[in-house]
Length: 494
Image 1 (cartoon, one colour):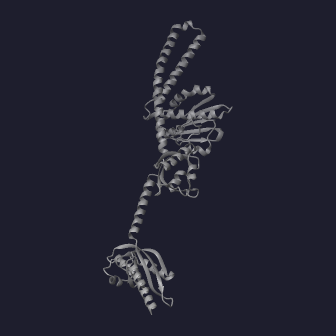
Image 2 (image 1 turned 60 degrees about the vertical axis):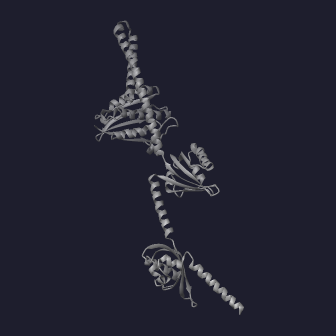
Image 3 (image 1 turned 45 degrees about the vertical axis):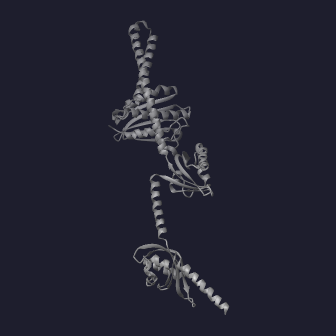
């Protein structure tokens, strides 16, 4: 008898503990019929729904607490099919009509015959969590918009497990697809330009050791062989022990900015050289004028005293002096300051002036210059100085191709003009080394050059392209291996 009383007391204590646990739980707990009538609700669920009392909630149906009836049907079907639901999320509705997000876990209780009898469930209010998730999604979307607008690539490096994560923009910058990207610090290091690799790796190690942000500009080598300039920023993330566990940061392709800066510096150097050349030309002209004047005096005063040989020598001196004058004047025209003035110009005069500067130099290098200036309509709207700059640059490139070829055949540059479809066409042909077909499409890109390092800036043809376009013209290039190159410029007739 005493044992029976003790057992009943223990059961009563367990029931009381269970009741206290249920009543004071932070989650809403309920029992209901399969049809959806509440049989029991705890205080937390009463507060969650916004009822004034337990009886008020018991008088309501389970179905009335679903904001969307479709969700109620979905939950009922899953309970029927599986006998339980776990952490199913839906939007609920309170007594006053306000809505909130909840998570439901419920299980069907069977009777002794194995038929559904009751439903026992736990409801957790996740409205704040859901709002935080939505705020996070919105923030992520805004961040993505900002990074896309700024063309920023985002990266995340797990230092403990050596896992490197790149977003789509990073893959685009480095020239990879998701399929051929193999995350890891070594993968990224292989992408670095060989000349910059040691410096960049050291900088990243220093940021880990010295606990400072990473801010550096370097070059990368993309899979197809192109070089890009990258501006990178990163931050080291440390655990509670101060150990570096992650690095996160951004990359931005600043190639165009670097190119523009280099082009600006190059242009400034050209302006300086042009100013110097113009000043030198002016200084040279003064003594040349004295020489020419004295030659004419000698001819007038001493002509009768000179024999034929001496007269021929005097003529050679005059011609050589005139050639110096022509070259100096050509330099002055080439660097003159009216570079923005557009007017009707006669193209053949520009070509003759330009080629006259280099003709004697090319003769010494056994390069033959041939002219066939047959265009009848030879006036275009352009700037003479800039057009001469283009012609000189193209002819100089042709000369370089002939020098590189080192062929015993005759080295020749041909300059041809003709009219077609109300246009003036200038063709400059050479029988030099030629340009591989696979790189012709890049030949007008800024800083792209086929010349060895230190012998070309890669700006010449890019500038020529811009100048020709500014005159409403077009410029294109044809080349066939060792046969040579043809550069064609087309301009509307004035």
